[in-house]
Image 1 (cartoon, one colour):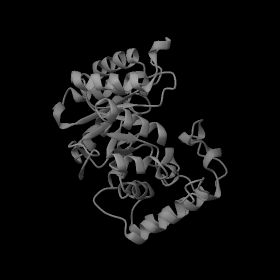
Image 2: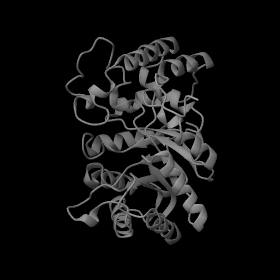
Image 3: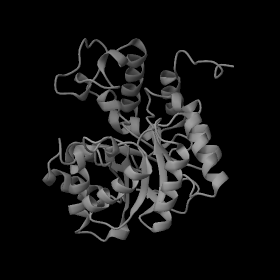
Amino acid sequence: MDYRSLGNTGLKVSELCLGAMMFGEKTDEQDSRRILHRFTEAGGTFIDTADVYGAGRSEEVLGRWLATQRRSDYVIASKVWAPMGPRPTDRGLSRKHLLDAVDASLRRLGTDYLDLYQLHLWDDSTPLTETLSTLDTLVRSGKVRYLGVSNFSGWQLQKAVDLCLQHGWEPLSCLQPLYTLLDRSPEWELLPVCRNEGLGVITWSPLRSGWLSGRFRRGMTAPPGDSKVAGPGTHAWDRYANEHTWHVIDELAAVAEQTGRTMPQVAVRWLLQQPGVTAPIIGPRTPDYLEDLLGAVDWTLTAGQLDRLDVASRPEQVPYPYFL
């Protein structure tokens, strides 16, 4: 596995990031440890979680495994924003919640610092200056080493970057967006901001909750009952079951056959070869699924194959002013 700099920082991370969202929920602790062992055996060093995953259980499972390892070998990332209790102060990006939440994450992870701490979502109820100044304090205290955001819009990201520069606060180092063959709108603003400002990009849900896994094909009228797509969410059936999606899947399957790779491997490989992308976050539920996803590294798509996927996945309608 190769290693890449996280944006303009000197921090080197593995080109695949292991997402721990399933740990402690759909993936039990034994299989979680197997996944962690195999990922790190393959050269993976970058692991992402969040306080809300499994209501803290993901961090706890990861923490118990981390206690058996040399801490400095790994880049551990977590996120903050989501409700962690019934009180109004148990959520959001206020100074109080950030200070409480980082300590709680450190306890669950059994470590005295996070390599990367990310804002999970934008918080309309808290001044951004309050949030960013608190993050700067966390870096200065040694509890956090690098900062990032997830699920911000273009103007939100640029405003955060500019405020850090204006006030001399610790700058942002990365963005964690949804970016896949089925979700290319980050190319309009988010990725250009990241490239211009020197931010790394770690993309979540590279298979779009299973849509690009090979289980979904043209002619289906409903998702498999055991798939994530069968449940509610931004990945839901009604959102993606259309001609554009089926065309993308058709072309992905064709490129997979041409390369002798699986559809998940090609979908992740496409991301690895996009300008500005540091590391896709893979979140396997089982050790076998991880083994398949590890096959996305150590090879490349040709220019012709990239072009074929690019043309197929290009949005049919681009909003103003991006079509000018």
